[in-house]
Image 1 (cartoon, one colour):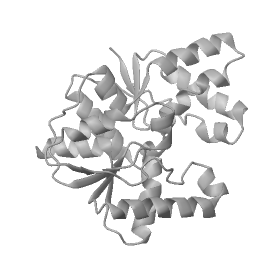
Image 2 (tube, rainbow, N blue to C red):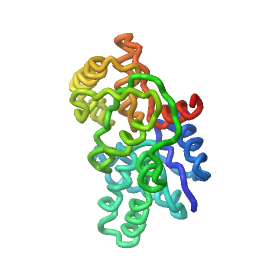
Image 3 (cartoon, rainbow, N blue to C red):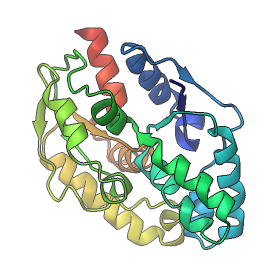
Image 4 (tube, rainbow, N blue to C red):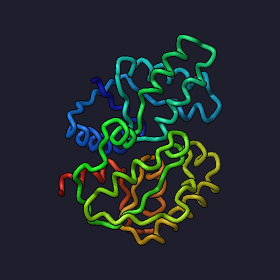
Length: 242
């Protein structure tokens, strides 16, 4: 079984520790991940801005990169969700459409793969901290990732999971939205950070580093000591501490 890591731009350039945590965790279950070096941006910024021609070029590179993979695993519900848009990009190109659908069917967000494919909910982690969870929009709405991260966190010894008020509200990042409508985006992330602080959690966890980066930036600006982590990081740290 050839399992490939789709690292995504933010994790590759800014948060490589997230990809490392994923790889090390999956290695516990006999998964040796491949890393096709030709992979690039999934094309989401261009797609969301209406530049579908440019998005197709990125998509073609991704299709080539993972052509021979049995599974493609990513630490981002947003970028995995973009792969699920590829059939729309190639709806008028039968050959490419077939390839796009094939990639869509074998692409998984990290917790989806761990729970749905491997059948793992208890990784043997211990993390004695008060944690709250932000369900990112694309992961929960495009991919339907809802129960998987909660199932994993419930099995972590010592972890106290505190519900996040208005959890499903967007954090305000939205990629180019944060740049084009900065004032609205800023108001949204401030509201999200307010809700995080209401929980009195020590740690905010999520599945998308873009959203977590946005919220973390607001918290740091306000000098709030909440630690922000991808769930893969939390689980891997918890395994090392167990």
